[in-house]
Amino acid sequence: MRRAGTALLATLTAATALGAAPVAHAQTIAPDCTGTAPVVCHADVAPGTYTVILTLGGDEAGSTSVTAETRRTLLAETATAAGEKVRRTFTVDVRTPEGEPTGPAGSPGLDLYLGGTSPKLDSLKVVPAPQTRKIVLVGDSTVCDQPGDPYSGWGQQLPQYLRRGIAVANYADSGEGSQSVLDNPALFPAALERVRHDDLVLIQLAHNDKQTPRDTYRANLTTMIESVRERGGTPVLVTPIVRRWFNSDGTLNNGTALLVNGLGVDLPAEMRSLSADLDVPLIDLTALTKQRVEELGPEGSKALYLYNEKRDNTHTSVRGATEYAALVLGELRAQHLVDDRVVAAPGAVGE
Image (cartoon, rainbow, N blue to C red):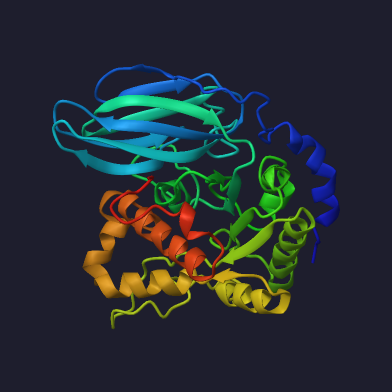
């Protein structure tokens, strides 16, 4: 068994450059916007957290969605009637790299994309919000900001359920397990550098711990939990989403679906046990997604994953990631880990 605490401390200095320092200015920024469908807006800002305030609508009826940076959904498609205007606000995290931490850097500053069937933008401004509370995500490809269609991680869809006052900082990365995120300065060390008092750090790691021994797995998660607590944050363990792997009776009661690894380690069960042992909040996303997939059945559940496109029973579609993000948010609310004041009301996502 190898504890990563020493290596983690050694890499924090290197991670500082990857973290997003709060901006030094506080003025309102008017982004440059071009195009009509989509409307592309760019704000030349430093890494940090920013509140976006926009008014949608116009003389004609419209239907507008908003994404940011690497396909992060900030606002689900929102209809406006002819002559109607609605205001929406949300807080977004800006960093480099802008998507997966080991991926391309992306473009500097904040990029917003207003799409939908008929985008209508009336006004847009960006305001620095350096003290914003964060939900920091540490995970794998089922969580990360996926760079291209048809893939989407649930962390990529979570921001649309939140309003101003809380930002999602997604440090999940494809192919990572509990050891690799500790060893790579761009991953958990960089995420940890962002954590301040009262921030949440959601940890979902299991899909790539295919050969990780039980004691090593628990030790790695313990290192993350203790490190987050030392910085004043609140760690939250998230058991992994299920693989869409049905038994003949229509259930997912098998090791492939429920993330029992090649050594026979029941990874979700170890997370549940560690949660109890260390008094850490737990979101049992394995149980929640199992219930949803079984509810839809072998045929209906294909739409949650990329089965039709890729014969992929592990990675989620935009629909699946959006539904799973809603499950995560529901648990955050039920456990009073987020204040209802920062949760978008039904029908007014992002308001």
